[in-house]
Image (cartoon, rainbow, N blue to C red; front, side):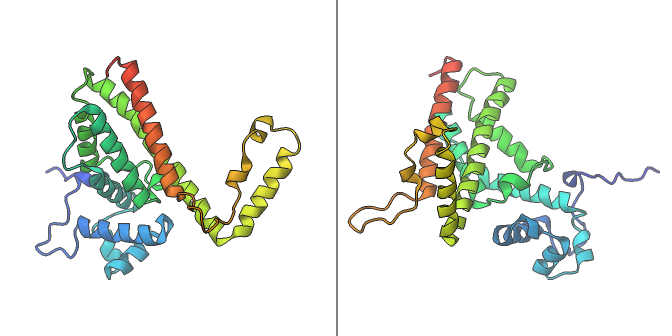
Length: 249
């Protein structure tokens, strides 16, 4: 009699089949996301999650074996948020909608951009990949070309999200410590004065310096809005380039 294989991949293992299991994967995932959003990815330990669920640590191990399982569940839940209920008509509108939704979800879970690398490919990853390829049905591309197309788009979206998270984190730190900004500006001026950076010296650095906004003038747009505008500009340029390279308009 053969023994049942004990799979390492969580998606190949059935959930506990007790008549009345205390938890399911959806409940555990919700608790894990709540902790990560409030306290950061580093706060995720089996002990902390067990506290959130009001259970013993060993009880939690009955449902998930390791942090790899937790990462897989988190990754799949985030991809579920990225899925669109319906794609807009036209490949360009559909691609843009998925790109914007992906960026929005990543920024809603800023820790996810750098913490879910190597996550196990789950059911919602399959759905996201299928929807992404469906967005390109209007183009005369084979499946491999569609995947290559989405590799380019994903690289741009994830890069934008990562840069946005970093910029907003730095901005928040600057608000908490204005002296840090002044020190950075002082250091920059000292370096520019050496003459070793002629191209950087050509920039108008006054616009980057912290300053008071006069009451009769509108304050500058918040950094999040500036970065969102920059994302849209880059997305348009990228899709223009891809359309041109495919001779599709």
